[in-house]
Image 1 (tube, rainbow, N blue to C red):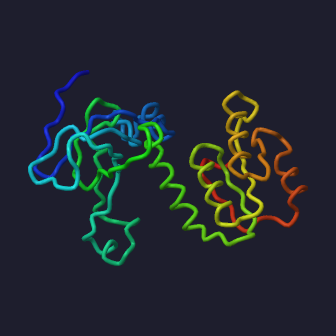
Image 2 (spheres, rainbow, N blue to C red):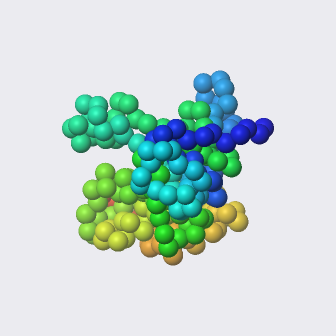
Image 3 (tube, helix red, strand yellow):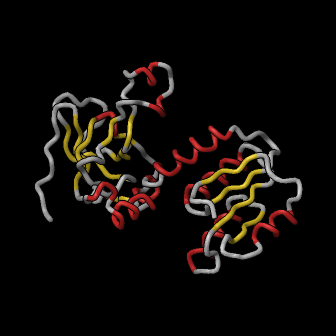
Length: 227
């Protein structure tokens, strides 16, 4: 279906989408229609500024940007207490606009300029920020033992950040690691610092983990449904 691209209001920016990721949430929305209706897809976005509203001053046409899919309002009780993750009036474009489109028009404070990356590299900023949030909330200390459940991109980013913070060991649990995709994920987990990777499809997975790490773990970080 084709539509004319949405003209930006005075405080909005129209982005020409160059790259848009597809994550598990998008697949869930596509396959299951939560709420009984189709939902706009795409929330990992990079592109360049195509057009700006008359009051926009932070970016100019042609500049490379990523698009944030949610932003706290900065005015509600939670935001004023510094608890932006529980904002009661969170801003999003995802209710009625898809980033899997040629153009995307959003509020100017939802675009972040970048340089030094290609558009494909920049589009993973969204899952990277999720990994930052997860590892910050986990408050992992140096030399603590950590399990990361999930070998997708967020789990791999968490592995990198945990190793940078001094966690040891970091063990990754992944699903269907014998598949072609699973093998690449397992290789990536080791390359990013995982001490060991276990396949959750294996019947004796729990016994093997307990045998090799009898002292247990101080933290378990879940980035995918635990199995």
